[in-house]
View 1: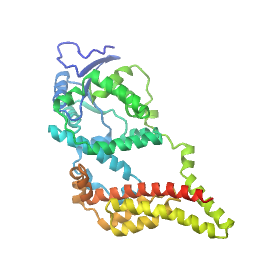
View 2 (view 1 turned 45 degrees about the horizontal axis):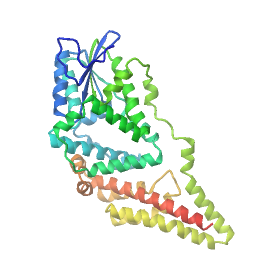
View 3 (view 1 turned 180 degrees about the vertical axis):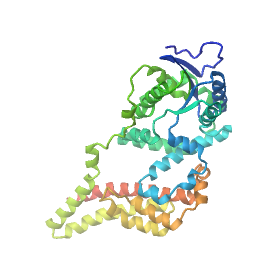
Length: 396
């Protein structure tokens, strides 16, 4: 194996390309930045020079469809999103993609343009196209399950902060992100700050990517990946990798399942105790302590999301009940009501990419407003549930 970025002559490739040899195969790993026009050009140049049998890209079927299908937003069913409890997942995706689009537009490049270019070049040249990344939902769920409550809060706060980030980034800074020394330093810092994220989000995918790439057909392979994955792929080149195991979504731990029922069990037990201890008088006080914070918090958060009046009332009424049943949340109830009242149109869905760039746009778009209301009332209900449970317990 050679891990030199300079492949054998006569090919003239840059330092962003790493040449690997594996069991008679020549693998050219192109490290890119996802919003770099130079990366787009370099990917096309490498494919043209190498004339590979196979082009591998850091995509899964879902992400390729998202990059290729400009009408995908039209197919969104808001009721289905809410019922399948994918509201937070979709909102997170919108925040991340909006951040990338803002940076990409400043540089005149669509996020993921180098991947699209690689796919197109592969098809035009007759090379086989292989998607070598793990399913995006498996990656996100494995990452989220690996986080502690505190780190989940940190990640959520970081996503919100990135949405408000107003700083501009230059093309030179983007190109610096592909520098191996800079990437190595950033990865080390990332691992120190959030080691629970670094393993499923970076390390596991490095292993998955190189495993799928080295098993791709053909003798000459060009693999297009984000520059941050190159070092790890080189590291794991000769290691055995079980991609099926890495694709499994770990079940929620038994203790975590039980914890969801702790508050309902404590509150219901307190109600039972209050009823029998004071012949109903204690129960009335406890009901007040439970209902008041639940209703106020859920209603207030719904108002902050500028929900319809009927949705606000529904949130106030639903929260004390749904907080006692972990299988259904106040956000699901309020979201369905808001969706019924707002009736998002195809036009709203089509404008999601543009509207999701700013908070004003999110509030203006009927589809994203429904998502915002669902997320906000979920947060309000959760806060009210903790306050209510603490208050109820203090009355024992």
